[in-house]
Image (tube, rainbow, N blue to C red; front, top):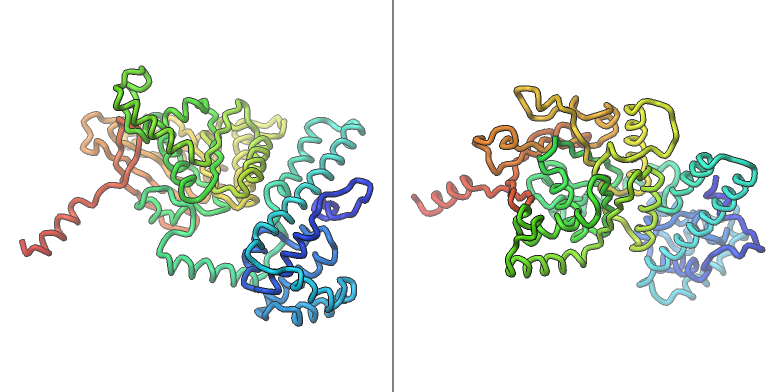
Length: 459
């Protein structure tokens, strides 16, 4: 595997490494075993350039997964059991690791350094291999495919093989306890309380499909989710294949500034509204959102962009794609469009798992719901492929009755129809639709609040 070969020493090539950072990570774990949970989320044993350090870290993980305390004695015993103690320098070397680590305060930064050097070695090796493939006369498609397999290492230094129940038990209990104490969702929030309560947040590894017919508010929905995720959770990659980046930003600024979208497009706004737009732009300027609007974007291009952003910020909270049917497959298959969309859908799900981030995918629906008497979308309305429904962890449809009926009793109401959810309930959430500003908002619990007031006042 590329991951294993990336560890091989090639003295003439001066591979990137930082042995001091590796020692600091191991020393910090021995000083304070509590930091191991954070460290193991950033690196795996193979990420250490020194084979001795890789063996020490693997022993630490094994000891921790058995539920034993991680210290010099237990780690040395585990290394001895593996017949590696002498190879790493013995008990004396383990003791020197703690002596050389005065504090554990910077362990995360040092672990990220180890991961970055590992990624650099892996990518350098992959590039050399693909250059050799070009020299052998391999096709460009074959070379691109070879590079794509390496992107797993570019975007995540933590990807690895099977996970034991011993490891999963600790991680799951920690997550459950955090949710219990904080009383909040464990995933990325959408920004709408009612939707979060139904979905439980957008969690890493999930592909969430949001489908709707035109004019229902798909883009407005994705803008709101991206802004909220960037504000509370971190960097967002927004792929806009239908709208140019500048146009998308204008939609975002207009909604945040509460400026009428139709007048904004024509430039017919007041000085006060212009001032509001300046305030909105200043707020948006601070959000870590990056927009990719390259036409004909492929799955491979998307993975490269994700790797670049993760390297730039050190993390990635969310990917959004507007919309799925405009994304291109990385392969040059001669299959049908339905097969190509199925390949894209499966690729997005794999990418979500590799990156451990949620991917929100907007999808067009076919015209069947326009023709039916009941216009609310159904899973069969997903356009081009049933694979989208199969791969998605959740499918949400947007519906506004006033689009079909101007005299609808539900004017200003939007329905978020959760038609599929792999690990949660299905149902409908009603939100307010602020059409002038192209924004959704939680509905106020009007009747409940009124009844509560009446009971409290004795009315």
